[in-house]
Amino acid sequence: HLDSLPLGSTVDIKGPVGHIEYAGRGSFKLGQGKRRHAKRLAMIAGGTGITPIYQVIQAVLSDPSDETQMHLVYANRSEEGILLREELDGWARQHPTRLKVWYVVSQCGRDDWDYSVGHVTEEVLRGNIPEGSTPETLALVCGPPAMLELAVLPNLVKLGYDVKDSCLQF
Image (cartoon, rainbow, N blue to C red):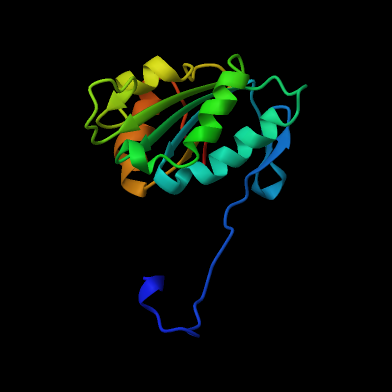
């Protein structure tokens, strides 16, 4: 861990990695000159995996003529671990037809929590992202590998997503 290194230590840092770029108005540039376009984005993030998703949301909302609809399911261990919550909630209030946000926490000590407790399940996704059976819908996912492999990708398949063609993993 960085906090245990002596002052003056050298560390190697890698990144950014990946070849996904939001080009605006629902268009994505992928590696090797490929492009994808979508009118609706199903965004699923876990923990710090919100970072690239947040950047796409920011880019979409910064262009008033971008009509891309975004549906975010954001999973964390606890409510306190939700990064960028004020910004996400503010954007969802300002742009209710363009951004919907749903939180999932593993643990919750509140009785008045309005969102999901547990894991990213088929039921959670079905209630909060668009069906994936149309070519105009694209899933963007980023999070811990176990969450993606055991929960997100299998449940996207159940919702009609072709995870090889209509799902971009950051």
